[in-house]
Length: 406
Image 1 (cartoon, rainbow, N blue to C red):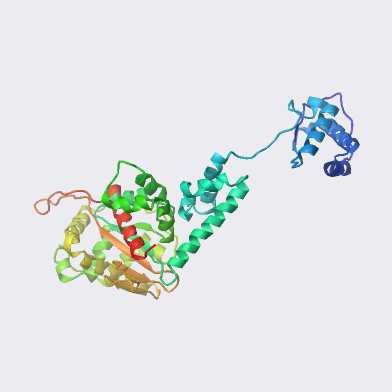
Image 2 (tube, helix red, strand yellow):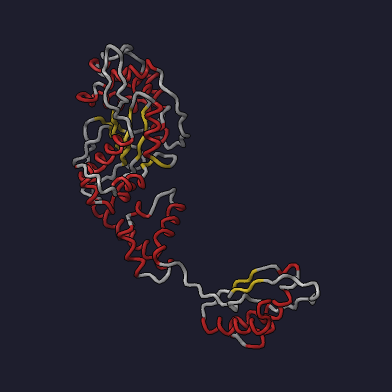
């Protein structure tokens, strides 16, 4: 029942009697006399300057609500209640809005992660709304369904270690590199933008071979991405070069003009990267986009030529630099490069066994803008675009899904 205050009248200056006992008595028993006394008190209060209020009285008993509404109208008509006689039947949200509201609530409580990230896609959750009379009941059904999904995956993974899959994108131009990563991630910890991936997957005109397995698992995608903690980081060209100069093979370093670098320089460069800071559990502020020095960009392009056939050499150099940086930071982690993860069919490029938590599987991908080096390298396709990297992430994660038999 809703009662709105009318404008205060200077002609009516009666004091307001204490009707608290009558109010509660009327609420419980709906006796006519106490109800009339209470509404008379409200009529007087509403004419006072301090009476500019709206009183909402939730009543679940329909008969009581009807009786009280009639009493209020009889005592003061529209000086106490509005022309609906103060009776408003609240039935809650339409069921068609349950999912949207629940999704917004989920995102606000889980760092932007949607219901889909918990396995509750529209297709999965819509039938639950039909079975629920209220949104509160709907929430309960969603929680129960999520528990069932979690139990299923726990049973599948009971004898396996669940890795965290972090894709590391190296490139020659930092502005392009950072822009691409920012486009494909959300939040401060560089988790992949699942909403973007789902939107991409839902385009019917896209039928690339690597999308077909995901289209079949469309309702599971967000959940799988969350369970595998899929993230995307950039590897600046200076950090990549420092690792190659310090730990790269002779064949790899022979491609560079500056062929040698110290372990300390490599460690210092790696420690400044966002992926390393997140790896250590530190908060990492957003990087400031700065153009790469042309000489640095060209040196990276020379090394990147090995990505086609000798990417293992690049990965080994990077893995060695990360291992040295972890050791320097006092983190007791085990790093394996191109050797598998001792977990079934998993063969990550760089496997990091952290002292606490699930292992981290780094998947470096060595990309470039395709810029030319005059009289040395011809201009090539730009593989550092969001489209290229998005496709790589989807293919790489699906490989983990299949290997883990999720």
